[in-house]
Image 1 (cartoon, rainbow, N blue to C red):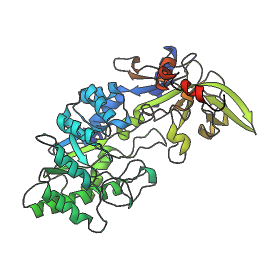
Image 2 (image 1 turned 120 degrees about the vertical axis):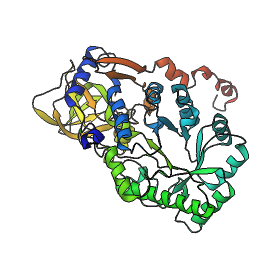
Image 3 (image 1 turned 90 degrees about the vertical axis):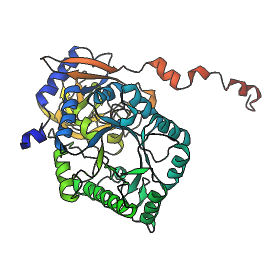
Image 4 (image 1 turned 180 degrees about the vertical axis):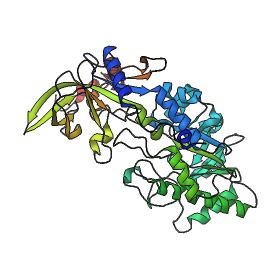
Length: 452
């Protein structure tokens, strides 16, 4: 297979993205009355799934699951289910979303460090695969599993180290995830657990995501592979038949180039884990951000501009409620900014060093600081690139700001067509979430209040 066939797209088509922004403004999806919107590239998402599949050897059994947390929107999950992917979930809510999207239970994997008995019982009754996070959880599963057809595994922490973002690294010496493989006695305890529970047939490992190098990820997978070989040698048969190697491929947020690719990831595994693709194990992957991040962006209206202390500040409707990680960890999660005029056309002209701030009522609500951009003015539209992963499905309800609508788009057949996949949150829904139906619940306390 030629290299170009394996790697697919090299970068995002910036001109196409600009056309979509202009079309969204003309369609009234963002602008006066609709100050922000998320845009999902359905064509790009399908191409990313195809690229992932092409990257893996065709003769190796692989279940590619999508990490629901990266885009917990049922229509997006439904599109992915339609491609034959599975889904990785980490809560009862995500499990419900995966089922609603049409994923068969046998193609769903439940991961979480704190599963309740009820959560486990529900998953086992459905036949959802479960990766236990710790040895105590194995005891719970043993009591609950009955005749469940679920594939059952154990997550290990290979303790191979952190990436450049500690909060995103799950294979550090003190990570909360998995059984710490290098702690004294831990490896032996895992061997004994597999001997005690012959229904265990899978090992799970996930080193982290953004900030983790391919070499670090491969080191974690190698640890799981070597442990599987040891377990099977001790058992005298192939007890471990599957390796869930997680996801975590980092995303390039610096420009439109797609790097590293899933083909780069597979090449790193070939080099770091000889034998992984020999067909001895069924593999499971759990990619999320690498499939979605560059296949989506956020558009928001500039409401005002002001000059403060010699700095131009644009006050927009894209802030911490939509880009929480970027606002609180800007060094780790910087976003590029595009500028369009009120008609949606790319803005040109003299550039100016400016801050792009959001609407939240705290001073740190800034998504971009000291950026050289075309001079912003009220009515312009700023675009936050590469927000297809996590940004749409994890809004923060600070200041009770409404969740914006999210629209998917396609350019197949010429032109741009939009489909709403999540409508804008209404004020009535915000009131309901804040307990409005119980508005008078505390008033009886005033009858005996000492202050009256």
